[in-house]
Amino acid sequence: MEEQNKLQEIKRPWQGTAWAWLNIVGTVFLSIIAIILLLGFAGAGMLMGSELAQEGLDPATFIAGLSALLIIIAIPLLILEIFLIIGFFKGWKWAVIVAIIFEALGIMSSLFSLGENGGFFNLLITGFMLYLAIACVQHPFYNKKK
Image (cartoon, rainbow, N blue to C red):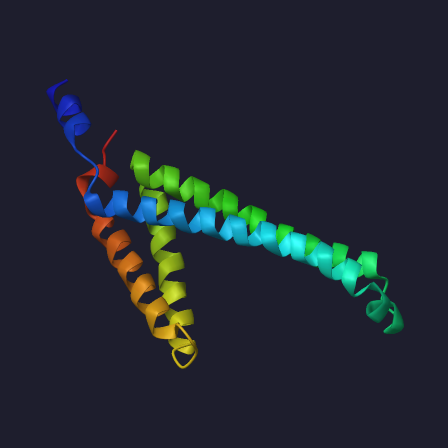
């Protein structure tokens, strides 16, 4: 009984809280961008309908395809991101491990875009997020014995 109370007293590390809040901000920002893109696709379909028709493309099908592709990619990633954020707040170790994998992939992606605008800044942010996730892996909050 005393050991159970000791486990409940373990506080979430600041790194886990920081990672989760930074991802909440990023998720909201990317959701807004996705909505703007969907509205932009609809506007582009209305404005460029005649040009697309001249190329032999049905404007409605073209815009619907772009929108569906965006939705097919964005919604599963949004759901995964929500589960990762909840996992960081609740102490789920699998969420930390998945976050480390995605952050490491982000580091590799950032290395390929170093010469582009914002490439170095992206590398710094991704590296900081990887540090936060790695700091959580060994913390007792994420290694609770049941």
